[in-house]
Amino acid sequence: MKSGKVSVVIPAHNEGENLIDTVNYILKNTDYPAYEVVVVDDNSTDGSGDRVAAGHNGDSPVIVIKADGLGVAGARNLGAQAAGGDILVFIDGHTYTPPGWLPSLIAPLTDSRVGMVGPAFADLTNNNGTKGLGAILRDASLEMDWLPQKADEFYPVPLLPGGCQVMRKADFIKIGCYDTGMTRWGSEDLEISLRAWLMGYRVVVQPQSVIYHLFRQSHPYHVESSQVIYNRLRMALLHFSEERTARVFDYYKGIPEFGQVMLRLMESDTMEQRKQFREIRSRDDCWYFEQFGCPF
Image 1: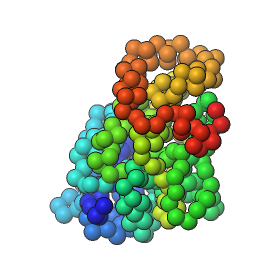
Image 2: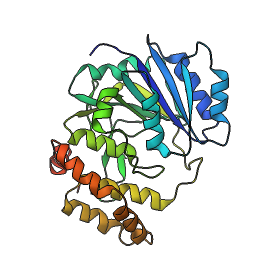
Image 3: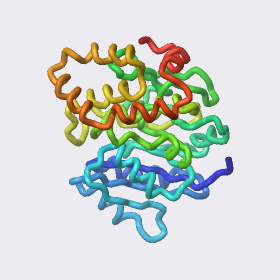
Image 4: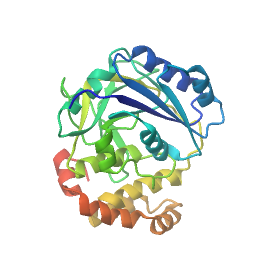
């Protein structure tokens, strides 16, 4: 594919100074002929989105759009809808992008089989040389474990954490965008990685691009454990076989919120989406788990 315009989409809710720094780093260190930065201010109350808007106008490539508490998936989708680029780079509002980060990151998209790309991640506050390059599902909890580097060129990985995910806009739309059935935060990144694989794309990590990410002990907004569990169970219902889904349910059935979460799932569009995904996918979860040797 020819190099097209890149839209860097940043969903943000109460990111404070981190958002200001993230945008400034992108502007300072992006050596690319045509790009824009789309900040989705998702109902922030700390004024950070307004500060970005006030500091970048006129000829600036920065656009700030307002959202009314859509959550991560919805905010990313809104940013993609507003984006004018052929390539979408979804990135968190608490990252450092060093010089040269972008050209190498989007380079794997010259391979038409590649549908999603992610960088190597390093810890912004503890740069001890350790990097995470893609991830794998740990067990029936559907929590993820980071993977170490295994090659110098880009290569396939089971999952890409959502701190930075890159897709062609056309493929993003074809895959179905982020799942807005996911509540607030959690698993939307893993789910779209899995869905891309099941729809026939390759999901790869690019070791030559390193993004420094602020790994926080807590969110700047409230996230309930039931929301996180809901998203994990929804991912299982959307894509896993009955047997594998049952293992996930068995893992979580002892928690107090399980009954409430299951009721919400049954009242949602989850089963309808499950049917639709099965009609359009070219691979199933058995292929996926065998391909990557996932442990359940």
